[in-house]
Amino acid sequence: MRRNIHRAPLAVASALLLGVFATSCSTEDPTDDTSASEAPADSAESPEEGSEETESSEEWFDQEVYDTQYEQRSATFEGNPEQPWLQYIDGEMTDTSKLASKGAKKACFANASISNPWRQTGWITMNQQLEVLVDEGVISEMETRDAGDDDNTQIADIDYFISEGNCDAFIISPNSTAALTDAVERACDTGKPVVVFDRGVETDCATTFIHPIGGFAWGIDTAEYLIDNLEEGDKVIALRILPGVDVLEQRWAAAEKLFEENGIEAVDYFTGADPTKIKTIITDELNKGEVAGVWMDAGDGGVAAIEAFEDFGADYPVMTGEDEMSFLRKWEETGLTGLAPVYSNFQWRTPLLALEKIFAGEEVPKEWVLPQTPITEDERADYLEANEGMPDGHYAKFGGEDLPGYPEVWQERQIP
Image 1 (cartoon, rainbow, N blue to C red):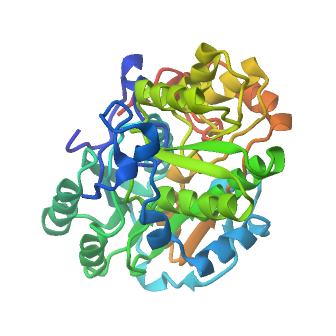
Image 2 (cartoon, one colour; image 1 turned 180 degrees about the vertical axis):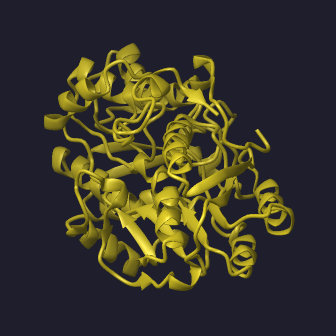
């Protein structure tokens, strides 16, 4: 999809959801990093060689941000807890009074992709929120250009919007962090509202940057859970999607730090969320000895990881996945000791609601930090019940229950 004006949705075949990622990352590697831990599981390199420590965890670790996100996990959020997509942590606000304007406005959305179930779920929710705002006369249309997980394509998309899109505001979900920075700054230079969400860039010029607490919080939650349920010296396999995306790198940087400090042996692999690679990695590690835990930076592939233990005849590991429905269902079926961290999918509603506030001249958080709370075993049954009938690629905390089309649009994966 290169260009879309909001129109009636079309059903997307369920096969689109098979074999793709369930996280906020790209399906393509946004960097040229060729470090050892990227070696595919089916390459000539053994898993042990493929898991040598990379430099990325050190490059992406920031003690100040780590400490901030550690504290934000227990922060008080402003706003109605029944509308978590509008909640935020109190902090610096952006005065938008000079951006106030009457009448319906055109939004231009430069999206990294909808190439994985996490992004597809969010994209559906975003378009249902758009339908409400169009009906209310807030937004006239949203023109979308999808970059297909390619930095250069997304840069060109943003430059097109600046020169040809006749945009009243820009929404940008960056494909990768460093590469999109200059293009975001060019959008900011137009003087029009710029909303960045999901992944960050290396500039604070946006009117608001919307995201859940972040990757360090995810890494802390998941590593602490594994540490609490394992013994010193136990082995953990860390299954990672790809390098170069801030929220993913930060997840691992935080987890690796805590594993090292607590005597947990962790070996990490980039898998591309390929079920075959995941099973090969785990089988090879089980052939070497006991594996007590599995850590993931995204939930897709979680079922494949569990099945590898079943196929081997090994005891289930202590495991962290995500709030993707296939993991929640397999977790319940097996009864393993687990946790479902969340990178709040409901954030896809927030950029459009932020524009509503901006066009009304209301202040918005400069950094709009949304709640990010894992699903525990005690809560799992409630989320499974609430999302009964949803496909495996759906995300439990999608936050669209009050929008038009619920639940059929999400059940049928109707993607504009």
